[in-house]
Image (cartoon, rainbow, N blue to C red):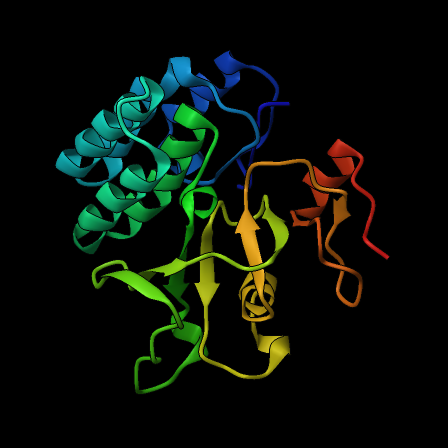
Length: 224
C-alpha cells in the first residue's frame, strides 16, 4: 500500500497510478496519508498544490525539494526555506506542503524537525488561543504555527500528516493525541516503522496515531 485517503470518497491506494489519480482531485489530494514516497509524481504533486493554493509557494517548494533530492541542499536548509515561505501560506498550502514533501522525498516537516500546529476554532470562544511553545514561524491566514519538534521519544503520525489540530486547553480529553504527546516530550515523525497503533492508556513510544481502517489494513494492533 502506498497511501490512504482519509475521506468518504477515498480509501486505500495500492500503487503509483492510484496515487496519480488522487492528485487530480483537490479533496482527495488534501486528504492523503502518504505511506511511501513516489518521487516520479513530485512535479504532479506540486501542480496539484498550485491548483488549490498559492502557485508561487508551490513552485518554490518544488524547486527546493528537487535541490534536496539532488543533494544540493540538506535537510536543515530545506526546513529553513520552508520556514521562510510559511508566513504566506494559507490552509490549503499547509496541507499540500506535507503531501508534496512526503511524495517527493518520503518526509514531512515533522521528519525535518518542525511540526505544523493548526488552531481549532471550536476549542476557544471569543479570544484566539495563545500560540504553542517553540514557534519557529506563523502563518496567520492558515491560523497555523511551525513549531520545534525535537522530543526524546518518538511517536508516528499517519493521521494528520504533520498538520496537528491545536488547542490551548489543559484538559487532556480535549486535546488531539499528537498535541498531548508532544507536550509530554515526544517527537512526531511520519517516516519509520511503528510497532503498534496508539491506544489511550497504552505505551506511546514507537506507536503510531492512525485511523482505525488503516491500522486494520496494515495489521497494526493496539499498543497495550
